[in-house]
Amino acid sequence: GSVFVTDGVSVGSSYYIGGVLGYNDAEGSNYVSELKNEGTVKGYSYVGGVIGCNASGQIIVDAINNGNISGLDSVGGILGYYYYDDMLLENTNNSGTITGRTAVGGIVGMGGRRVYVRTSQCRYWMCICQ
Image (cartoon, rainbow, N blue to C red; front, side):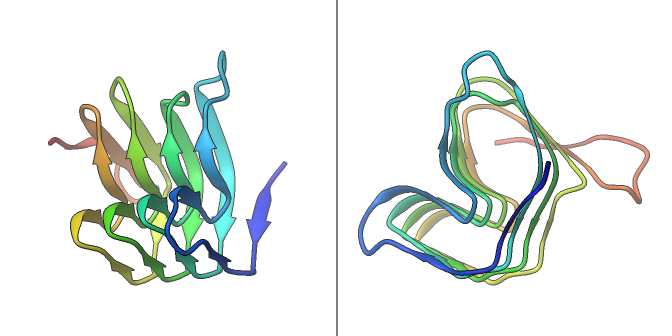
């Protein structure tokens, strides 16, 4: 099923803040899909419009953020931070304003290795390498 959040998430000075998931560590599952945030998200570090920190899933499909996202470090429109291996993002979209101090990105703030992104308009994977 889908998860759709319309109210804002605001935690004054905390870590792992996401519009839908703060910290994803679903052991044994590397796939997350159909997540949407419409609210404002505020935090300190590892702040994402959809997921604050992704420590398990390596594939995110159909994730949308339309809310404004703010934090200090590792702030992203879809994902604030991810651990370990490469990430695959497919059909993700951010239309919110993203603000922060370091490691700030429209889709991903910061990650462990490479991020591969593909949209419905693109036949090929694009690597956003760090």
